[in-house]
Image 1 (spheres, rainbow, N blue to C red):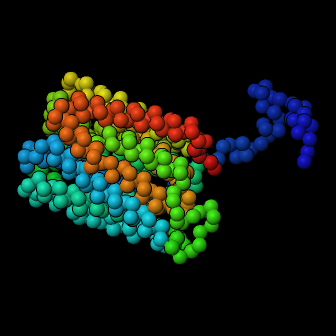
Image 2: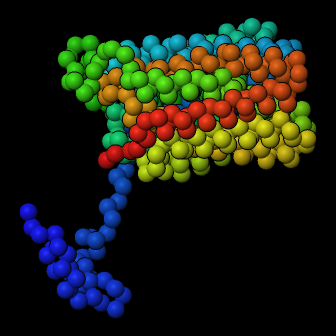
Length: 429
């Protein structure tokens, strides 16, 4: 090994140019000194992103209008709205847990993803024939069945397709495409309603983008893997056994946050109460997803360079402030402003949360890891929806939204303590 001091002195002896560069650096070609460009995202990540965009166009042609359809057309109340969304997400969470583990034991994850998008795309528009609130519940359960089948295998497929220091960027792109679809969907719905179409007709037209989403997944390439149930796993990549303790603790904190993370349908209802006209609700929903899309793109990339946990904590803090804003708002312009601010929490937290799962779980168990992650989010959805709906009915929207803010703030503090208790999880190349 050469002498470090002598090596440094040779550099000091070289002449400098007027701008401070050494002569040897000045003589190097631009290709030699330029920073390498980041590679394009893999084709599988791009295809899954477009599938998510198309699926959300179909979903969000319906979802922003569903609270009013339930409460005004079918005569349901806020508590039933909480039951519908909570039960649907709870079912999806159970299926995510199972489908993620199954995908670890198969040679391919993509068939489960195709199945999930196909089922959701076919059944979602059937809300158009609903004549009673329980009909909507049945359709939402079937829709979430499809989501449960696809979510964990899809996230694991994305994680399989990129190196560790590109995980935040890949998940940020996917979430941005998802939110872009959620932006386009309400605009399409508003245009159709403005043209004179009825709600039920708009629901039927959501069939087309849902089926196109399933076709997009078919274009996603996937390498064959050795199934975990057939091939012995290396010691560093166990296919069975308990998850790492640090990952389990992370899930517990995430569960507390999710208990206060009720459906965004309540925010639409609150905006309507504050004076936002029904016809403008799809536009407000679109503005929310602009904030989600832009923030996911920016902060997803940033989570590959900073400790991911800091972005999650910041996102949960924005969530708490947004819910407090909705709880104390007194007019329609405040509702609109808080909607945009609130949307930033998704971009801050979602890509970093998923990239953290990739960091904390062994490679051979990624499907199960993302299954547990999605299970925790969904399992908390039913109690979160019932809690928000019950508090709303008994004490008003301020109590319901204020409770969500308090739980988010407490979760952010616990996650900070979790980070200090162990070595912070940092992205590595």
